[in-house]
Length: 365
Image (cartoon, rainbow, N blue to C red):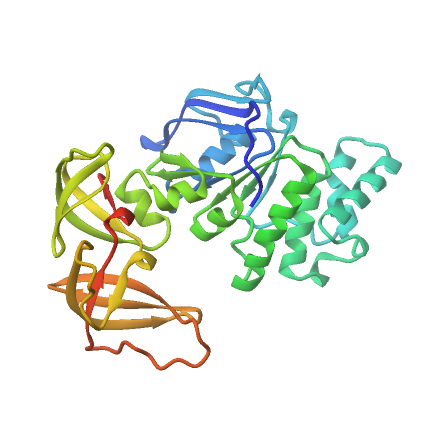
């Protein structure tokens, strides 16, 4: 992952809203900043407004309210082709009748850049994306990953200050998508410009971005680093959207310990956990922080309960074990740390579930 930056913001979005005919609010009063050289992600489910926000940065959509500043300039009256940004679309939009080199240099040709300079910049861009020897090929001779690199090179050749990426990896298979995530990180570090990516894939955002804005219903729910979002989500929605998590309904009252509450949660009883919300809360605990044992744990200070294994999902390096505790479904992640392993847990096995209360959070909506 790229290192974070403390530089001045290159993008300032202030109270931006976008409403479509029929009074459909795609984006509602969004304010955020993106710093120079940052890899920033807009993450959320379909229809949350992330692509609309990206398109407003590109100039393809006009906000109904609010202002967008890019590199210190108000974008209100600036046309898309005059902005210091470039965009890589989900479909790549590679011209099938042009060679790779012609595709990459097309924008420079439109801008009437001299032929020699076009050739030099195209060669430089192709080297950046590791396609230096494929300039003469046609798009139908390329793999999906190579076509995606052509689209990246075509955007980078114009030397934008900000590169906008709209679900750029969604058309790739899982293994290639993972490889291209690391390739995008390498590329961003090499060129040193600001990347803003739109994605609905949480693992994609977590593995690439310095910071992530999680969106829901046209609003930003939380902006934080991947680690902060995973370990310290600010709401039930963010906790549930980022990774896998167990959520239990409960009630919280004030605690004598600062930044903690006393939460009563079935089937675990009352415990002191991190949180500020009082009244109805959700106890949130990640599955890898759940302990699962055949024998009752001897550590009496940990919340615990007995239940029955109902399902086991095998994922190679780990398994998710699902346990029914008095009608509550709990998921524990178990590492498969040896190649040959006789499963300790089977469907119907009686087990004890426990966790360290320090690893749990009390969250509001």
